[in-house]
Structures are given as structure tokens and as C-alpha cells.
Length: 466
Image 1 (cartoon, rainbow, N blue to C red):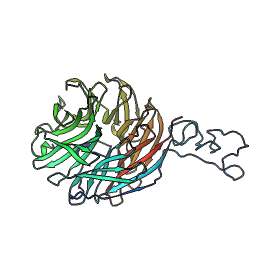
Image 2 (image 1 turned 60 degrees about the horizontal axis):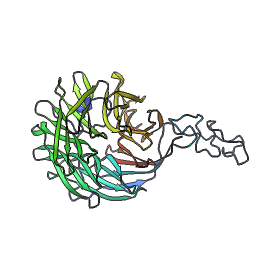
Image 3 (image 1 turned 180 degrees about the vertical axis):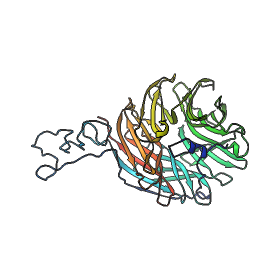
Image 4 (image 1 turned 90 degrees about the vertical axis):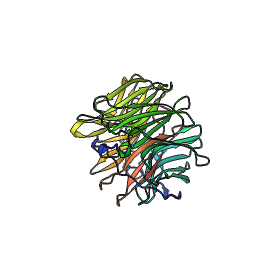
């Protein structure tokens, strides 16, 4: 069986992974790109602040000579930004009656076909770099990078179209010494290979390009780089799914030096079932160890996989998770591993899941959402708060879901945007806070009534927690 494309949006079952996603098309080969729009937008949130009228019909805010404000009484009074009749966090009004967040701007990108945004990174000046894939009908897909100013103004755009002008995809990126390292896949003359590009953001030119062809041949040997990070020594860790001729696909982890030279490679094939083993992300800790995340097809279903390797590529341990499937990961300030993805509830479906583990993979806490869906991205801000973003099942479609949680994984606020009552499929694929934590960028895709998907980017102002 051929390995699927690594980006799977529907969160309901692993059967979708086995089917894979359809190939997506690209921007023109001459480097031109589709249009981008940036505009203010409102957000539909889990609960709304309540402003009740005063008894005399005037504004509910009390005047300077009236009684002191009482947070939680349902009246938005002096010195209050909101009041939703409670003094708890986890909704659209903090326990001290301040608004948790504000949407600063929203942008979409339409290249003419299906487009998405998969990752975002801030630079030191507060600009946002957004990575995705753009599709022009009949021309295949290209990797796409766009820069937005702090106010959402459009900046420079870079695209990459492989030599075959086929379906090339972007999946992840990270900073390395002021450059961006981008990973994805490129269609070549002998199949699909993992693609790694080091890009200068000053010149928007490639510093180097590496392609990796796994052990499989033909279409059964299709390979996809799905995750990348940098370790404390400045070396790169690239997670890939590599097709094989006899075992479906294996998870792979390569360590590269800053010039793109391979230092070592590790492969993982489930020792019992030898079917589809799909990498989803990679995380590096402060000691240079690597955590390779993924999922394995086994008899009767799918299990999550977490594999720890030392700086020299030696395997420290490998654990499987029978009910939890990681799609994304990061490290907290204490060196603990945060995983986000989906938790299986059997016939009830899969539910967004986030959990924290110590370096020996002892679970320190977890949170599972009430409604079906999955988290596709996870990040930590300087205060230790945890952000997740993904897709929520809404009627016959999908909506975008964004959470902010305290370090103990208790909910601070959540937002579900672009509701899918009409059966449209919307989702988030990446989330990142600014260095100081005052802004939050979330990226993904939205579907139009014509059933085409556009890349979607939203910037939040992040209010201080109570």
C-alpha cells in the first residue's frame, strides 16, 4: 500500500490516513502568486461576554459616584471589559472581567485552487512568516512562503516549483541562524522525495536544497518530510515518512549539520505488523535528544508512537499509545514533552487531546476536549501557557478550534471560528506565540462554498491572564 500524503485534515478516523489526501496543485512556474487579502475579522468564541441594560435603560456601566464594580454579576461596569455572570476562566471573559483575546487581523490566500497554511514563525522585528502550499488548477502545487507585517500588511512572497512541475508540498519550518529551514516533498522523475530547503529570508533565495529518497521504489517509495527542528548544537532534525516496497511506510529521522550534510539516520518499523508507520513531528530537548512522533497501523486500528533518540542517534526508548495519536509536539521550559493530537473514544470518535510527559515518558497530565476533532498544532509561550489549534467536528463539516491552557492544562480560553453549519471543512494546522507572548498567530485553511480551500492566517492580541 502506498503511504498517504502526510497532511490529513479530517480527524474522525485513521481510515482517512490510509486513503490519504488528494494531490494539490500549484502556483505558476514563473513565480507569480495568488492574491492575498488582509482584513479585520471577528471571532466566534466558546462563550460571549454579557452586557445587561441598567434598570433605568441607560448603559450598564456605573458612573464615577456609584457603587464599586462587582465582577460576575452580568453587568459590564466601570473598570470591567466584560462580565459573563461568573468568575471563572475557560470562556470568553476572564475571572477578573477582562477580555482574554482580541482578533487583530485575518488574512486569506487564494491561488486559484486549494491552498493551505501549515506553519508560522515570528522574526525579531515582529513580522510573521507563513508557510503553506498553493494550488493553481491544472498546474500542480508549489511550496509557498509569505511575509506579513505586524499589522497584517502583505510583504514578500517566495514559491518553489520542482523540476517536474508536479505536486510539491510544504509541511513544516524552523529558524536556523536567521534563515528558515523548510521541509516538505517534491515530485521527481522517479517518485516523490523528502525535500529540505534552507532559505535566506533576506534574499529569498535557497542557501541549499537537499532531497532524500527512501528505500522504496516507484510510487510505493514516495517519501515526505513532515517535521523539522534545530537542536542546541545548531544541527537539524528532520522527520519523514518513507515508503517501502514490502512494509507500507516507515518513520525516519535524519540529523543534518547546518550545511545539510547527513550525520545519521534512524528508521522505525512496527516490529509486529510492518504496515503504515507515519511520522508526524519531531522535538529536540535541551540536551540534544530527539523525540520522533508518529502513528502506526496495527491489527484493529492505529496507535501513537513516541521514540527518543540520543544526540548520536542511539535509541533510548520507544513507546506506543493505544488510545492517543500525536500530531504535534513541543518542549516546555522544564524540559517536559508536550504532545497534541487526538484521543480515541472508540465508536464515539476521536477527541482533541493534549498531554505532558517527563523525559522518561511518565505522564504528568492531560486534557481531552468534550467534542470530536483533533489538535494539529501545539506551542508554549514564555509564561508556560499552552496553545493548541486544530479542527472540531461541527454538524456535517469542520470548524477551527484554538485553545489557551495554563501550565496545568486547565482551560483559560477557547475560540471556535468559521463554523461549519453548511458542511464546509475548515481547520487549523499550526499555532505560534510571539517571543514575548503578547500576540498569537494561528494558520490553517477555510473552505469556500465552491469547495475550494484558501490558506487562512489569524493574528490575536493575547491579554494577560488573571
